[in-house]
Amino acid sequence: MASFLNDRSTTLSSSGVGARGCWIASKSRPATNFRYQLHSSAWKATALSPTKRIQREIPGSYGLPLLGSISDRFNYFYFQGAEEFFRSRAEKYQSTVFRVNMPPGPPFFPDPRVIVLLDQQSFPALFDVSKVSKRDVFTGTYKPSADFNGGYRILSYLDADEPRHAQIKAFCFDMLKSRAKSIVPGMDFAACRCFDRWEKELRAKQAPELISSIEEICLAFLTRALMDHDATGASGLSTETIKKWLAPQIAPVALLDAIPPPIMELLHVVPLPFAVVKKDYEAIVSYFSAHSTALLDLAATHGVPRDEALHNLIFMVCFNTFGGLIRLLPEVVQRVHESGVAKELSNEVAAAVRDAGGRLTARSIDGMPLLHSVVYECLRFQPPVPFQYARARQDMVIESHKEAFRVKKGEMLCGFQPFATRDGVVFDRPNEFLPRRFMGDDGAKLLKYVLWSNGPQTENPSVDNKQCAGKDFIILVTRLFLAEFFLRYESFQLDGQSIKSLSRRSPST
Image (cartoon, rainbow, N blue to C red):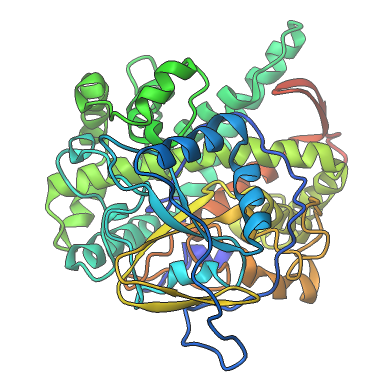
């Protein structure tokens, strides 16, 4: 991962910043008992294979106008949940490609119709920008008002063939490269301050709350690493301000824990206006205006107007990166705890840092193969962005493992990633979290099936595709967080979402 810090062209591999897909706020963890096994893989939407013939239309139905949408939405959110919603239909139609309605729905979100892709053979059609468009599909079948982003269509909503896409994405790459030396000290600052607070609370017989703590780490890290400023001070930016701004944008496609179901259902058919968070967004804009001068100067070198760059920067940091990390990092901690590899990780981290001269660096991170594998397995097992959307640019053929289907120009494709990344032919024991899955040569061969960044892990984002601009960044940040944790602790215990105990590493080990 030290390669991320090297000087690289705009084909730099990176994610979280400029991430593509739908971030859904939820503290619940879905079931993992997949009964429907999926099969192997290819990476582009292809011409019809001579071994597969189109034998039927895409199965599934959208039902009666309005009623079909309501029925599917209630099943998705309330009666079945996402995984059973897709699994039951895949079993019913004996197909990993089928038609269904996805939230939100009428009257204010008039077209919920999608073609679902669930396996490793069909899913990569979503990445082939020669055949699909990513214009205005970041959040699925609807697009929030541009007022949430200063009136601009942000990078995540731009298609790869739009001229502004290349300019803004190149700015993302250069921004990450320009701040590379601040990433490790930024995480050290944010994580160690939080760990000190955890220990103080445990001495006072209090149980630190995991998710809120990680939210604070993420905000402190991002503002410190990218803008040389700590936003967690009394007059700084807050996690609550960011989440309040995020909530109306994702409410149509999410279940937000704090909102009663009747109100939540209203939000699935009627968008919240920007006015409800206008003051919060103004506070965010004020903070970034004051502390991102150097980054905005960099944007100007790519031909991106300063004000447009400002609102894109806010979205990259607050929506894509902060929103993704506060889902990913608690999941990583939980999976490490449940899989019983904490002591091994602690020993590996300590040994790699010792061999690197006693300092945690991006290069010393490279000497931690188990830690690398754990992070990849978390991204496979529960990807932080579960959905990818795209619209067919032309009539095309999409192949599943068993069949081929005709898709018409303009039809919306929806990929539910947790099914594709638990494909039973690609992955052995796909529904189990295996910490060592990606270790060694055989493990490295599986990385092309890890799709969390809107593309295979083995491919790189560029100005010409829609793979996440911060792909390497997010992986490095996740590894750094784990390394900081296990450099200090050799074991820990959780009680639900609270930290029950922490066992500090002996200075001699």
